[in-house]
Image (cartoon, rainbow, N blue to C red; front, side, top):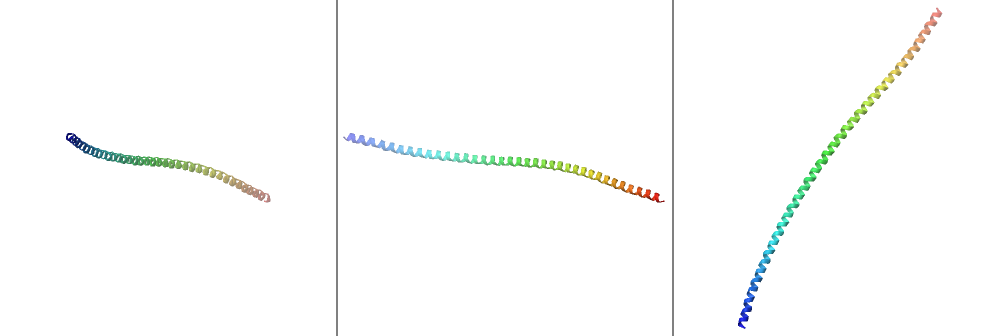
Length: 133
């Protein structure tokens, strides 16, 4: 019996030692897992920050492209409007010149008609003066 008790006692000690080792192993694993979790979290945070920076850079570039495109479009539109304005100005100038030429013809015609009427009156006066003499 003594031998059995000492056997049981001997058996318990290694069980305690195993239990301590198991607790130490669990603590070590828990610590390693926490360290890995922190490392993974730090890596995820770093990648997230990189992605945010890339997104901000892409947005900035896109805004620059849109601004450049709008600037080109505005410049093209301004050029087209200036061209159209010049066309309209030229067309109006041509119409004005045609209208002036037409008015000058009308004035010349009226002047000639008045001159003809006046000449006919003078001629008639001379004829009647000659008849009276």
